[in-house]
Every structure is written in structure tokens, then in C-alpha cells.
Image 1 (tube, rainbow, N blue to C red):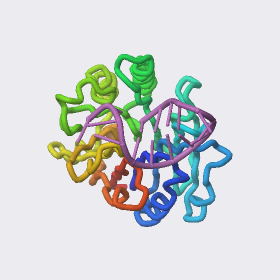
Image 2: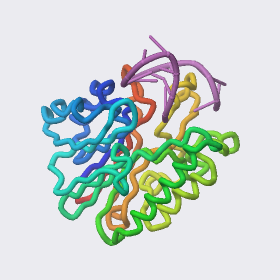
Image 3: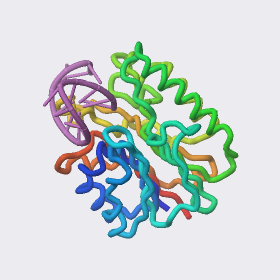
Image 4: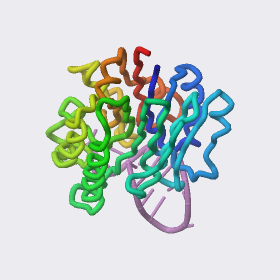
Length: 253
DNA sequence: ATGGTCGACTCTCGA
């Protein structure tokens, strides 16, 4: 089984990357964030044509999430406490629960949006605590948090950034402390591997000025079956790339 | 490295 997550920064502008990537990698599940498209304009037919089902929720303009899968989910729901439907999808495929999340970014640490981000992470944590950790659970997403110093290029300089501020890190790490395992970190304990390079930083990838804000985290029962978890840098080398890169995890069946 | 760029959608915002 293969699972992937990819913040595409507009699905309509990234079909030339996503569809060939999916055909090549044939993941069972692909979680997409920042689809930036309203539901009635979601390009479902592109997924159907290559043998995938797709569920999605978006208002257009910003945010928006989708899950492409070979099989149709047995259960699908959107949002957290009925809010932010375009930031979270819960799906169930048999005994596997798959969650796709786009955590609020937070703008600046002195803004209301950062307060909202912290509250959101707290609410997300509360919800995840209600799951039985013995179940098969996978959470994919753009967490908008780099949890550890190894996950950013300049920890000291970035300590007041909304994606590396101590409060955001603490709020996110409470989720991991429930017992969910960060698979990229499990498979690469000491490697600097980034999943995001800011468009605005010239030559960011060449200079190693990246962030690891995307993640696939899983309950122990799934994590112990993980044999591989990597960032795929190839999509960044395509024409009109996203500023994020896909993470792909492979599991023994 | 928040400034740059990029994508959505308007006369600008969010990331």
C-alpha cells in the first residue's frame, strides 16, 4: 500500500504534474491540499480517466482539500466540528481511517489568525484523542508547522515565524504525543529533508532554504508496517511547480 | 531570508 500527500497550490494549475505523477506512482491514496477550487469546478474527470475516485471540498480562491483513491471511500465527512470544511476530510476505507488536513497558516504571530491557528490545532488534537490508537489511522497534510529544529533551515532566525514558533510547535506536537508516528522522521531520523521551498526565496532549493511542514503521521499499527517514506523532489523540477513537494509512504500489506 | 513569486480574483489578498 502506498499513501501520498501533496500541497498543490491550486489543483487546476497543477494537473500537468499531479496526473502524470499519480499514473507513475500509482499510490492507493493521494491527499491534496490547497486545491483552491470550488466544488462544482473540481477537475474530477482527470482523476476518473486514470482510474481514481476523488472526494473534495473547496470554496474556491483559497484552501480546499481532496483525496484521490483507487477504491471509493466507505465513509466521507468534511470539517472539524462542522467548521472549516475546506480544510479537513475524514475518510474510511474498510478498517483504515484516512484524514487529510490543511492546517491554518496563521499569518503573523501577533495576529488574530495565529490565535485561530493555535485554537484550531487544539481542537484537532481533542478530536484525534477520541480515536482508538489501536486502529489503522493515517493523517496526511500540510501541518503548517515544522515540529523540530531539523525541519527548518535556520531554527534561530525562524523562531518567530508562525510555522516554527514554539506555541505552534507545542500545539502540533501534542498530536504526536497522543501516539501518532511521524513517518518521514521515523524513516530518516537525522536527515534534513524539506517538503516546502518558498517561491519568494530565489534559488531556495539549490541553497537548501526549505521547510518540512508537510507530514504523513500514523497510528502505531500502521507505522510499524512502513518500509519507506520520502519527499519526491522531481515535481519541483517540472514547469510551473508547486512550492510544496509530495511525501510518499509505502507499507507492507 | 515575509522581500522576492505565484495563484486566485479583482482594482489585492493569502501563502
